[in-house]
Image 1 (tube, rainbow, N blue to C red):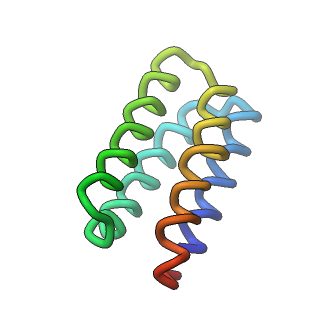
Image 2 (image 1 turned 60 degrees about the vertical axis):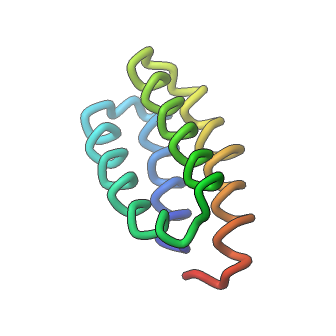
Length: 90
């Protein structure tokens, strides 16, 4: 779990440096890291994660890095902290 949060922080830093090629690569790596965690969530929680990922994809397509940073900080980090930390997943 800590690795996923650190990856989110790294993604946010890439957004503000406008390193778009690295950002796209790291975003793919981030989603790959999420896949094993999805098995620990129920159907509704998985739907929420997928919705956040979809919004991230739209923001990336629109080059809306501020929206991406907000989605990662206030949606993804918050969601993962609330639903995975309660299970003591590291």
